[in-house]
Image (cartoon, rainbow, N blue to C red; front, side, top):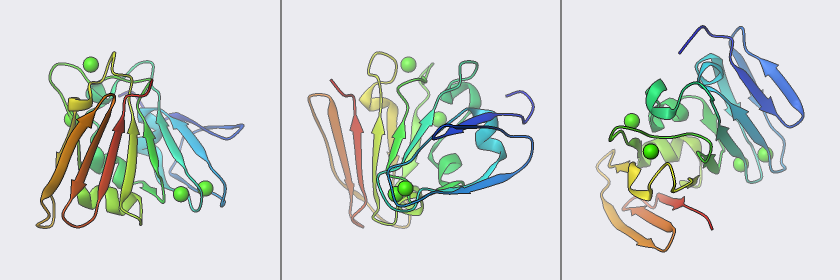
Length: 162
Ligand SMILES: [Ca+2]
Ligand SMILES: [Ca+2]
Ligand SMILES: [Ca+2]
Ligand SMILES: [Ca+2]
């Protein structure tokens, strides 16, 4: 990670982050595309209503390079329904660790979809953690979709898409 002047695109607006900023979105479907420097400079992003997507796209640093896991996203995002990792990678046996508490913190309905390109990130590269005493009650893969459920009602879908 170099410096703290990351970029993020929210709708048609491109922001260059030189200081801590926060965003609060409207009731529609919103998306934010950001790199690791932007993530580290972003104070908060509230998707509010609608199906809101966080796209992680950093040409210079993958999720592995930046050491990003669910906790790093949960620290910033709320009312977000999708994490789009189709333009990034996990390498060298690294996993993206994300637990039920982190999903619950990002989405009040405790439901999250992670989009991956199985050419770079396998469905099994996402590592579901158990937090606050919950257990994993269901972890099944059918075709390109892996579904994980926790005993506290948290739901995760990892979608390798067509
Ligand atoms: Ca929204
Ligand atoms: Ca939302
Ligand atoms: Ca990791
Ligand atoms: Ca990979």
